Image (spheres, rainbow, N blue to C red):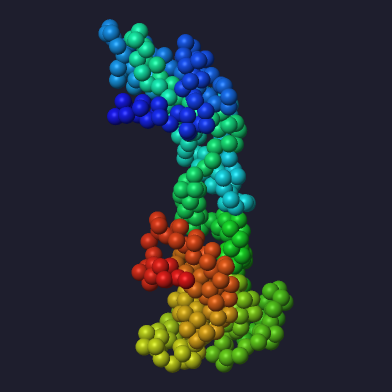
Length: 373
């Protein structure tokens, strides 16, 4: 195998570098001691390894020792020249670019990505192993090592998974901003904001408390366009008014009542019947408990099924806000956006395909990513 490597080096030394590196080395550096020599835009890493034992010719042991010396020379050269990765290898800007650059710099040693070519690994007939590697000198300038796309994607995947796991919404909306994913950026900015409360029964008809709350929060039930008698706390109206981007909650959730209406809606949904009744029951469910995650998910689906694409989008937004650590919620947003903003939906799809290589999602979500057009 070592003989084959040497033969390959002899064959490609000229074509790989655009000049005869072997000839230049033999003319100028064959008699040089161990060291690094720069010439014609290239660095020659020269190792002269004496025999480790008494014998006539150097062999595998000396070759292995010479290789170790070469990597030592390479590491020293990288350190002395402050070799580093090129941030321009990362095509997007902002927080994500910065964090990917730092992640790659921490995870990888730049020397592992410096391209170099073996020229010689031979005995020079004096029981000395002559081991020579050559590399383009431009790689040894600051910020000149290209980060391979595979490593950029690997870092991006790790960073998103870490941010989700740690509920780091600030990092997440910064990443979405870097990728130009406006909808997800707005959603996670809202998740990080103060919660907003719906109107209604939580005040127990105490007008003074209602007025105080209304003034402090700068909105009132009377100004909302409530189109459904089932929207008794104005939850759906407020969400629609905010285009789904509102961190809505309640002081007095009625979980039992919410679940009751959700179960009724689910029965019709699973049988594919009575969409208007499904919407009415889900509206009641979210008014009784605005953070009913499953109700918002089903609302997104039923609105999409009935071609109410804007309402599907608003419900998808709210579904994410109520369950921000679940990457599967992004699939609902992708599907809702596909009828409104195909470019952003495509970008979300690409991000999901990248991240879910290391994240477990349901069979349904996997199918949506696979059949997405």
